[in-house]
Image (cartoon, rainbow, N blue to C red; front, side, top):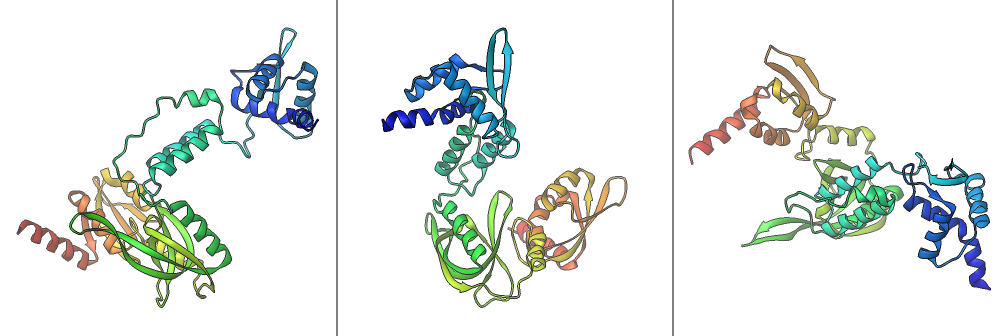
Length: 329
């Protein structure tokens, strides 16, 4: 009796699951199709009236957008995505691509997330991913705590309490090894994404300036009951984020350079639009921004033939010394 009760009252769920997985505007289902799917998948037999009654329930009482198309004397059904809660196929693909190539997610966790994404769409969209292949270097983290790190940090930020953790880095000793660089207690304020990495913005115990910590290098997080340090404003966080380039350095300084026009798109991709760009001559533009010198130095060395430093002079001198020392080797 209990089994029959659950089977009877589960029909609406069976129908919506079938429509989600096996229907769209190009693949509509008749009542007979739905009956067969439910019997094959759930082992439950239904009649036409039960299916039609439950579809009406789903539409009228539960607000599912089920379209009914009449062809001859038959009704065909398919589920229309709810734009407020359902992902579009292009959005699912964007999520899959992001986690396939994101370096801060281990391969096994990436695959789990990809599988969950595929389970959110119908079989016809998943067929388009049949030959999906990841073309990437072996640069993903092996830190399996990354998802827990995100959850723990989010909890600590919400509760406004401090956390402690171990921080790791790679060393050649004599072979490549991931070793503990230290243990820290910090007041966490936010997590940001930059150049395929997640960073925690936090105030280290005893410091006065905010620091950045890569989440994939953090292990063994412990949430304390001690409240975070006071006096940190949103403006302080925005300042450190805007000043950082590839998350090197913490303090911004005004930089003025002349750049070849061919660098314009790349400059906007790397530094965003919150910078001062003006035309200098037919082939160059002037770039003025407040960024950390350490981070900009690495960008400058990659594009040295296209950039002329105007200020600060100390950056120009440092680059000259780097080149001089390199050529002397």
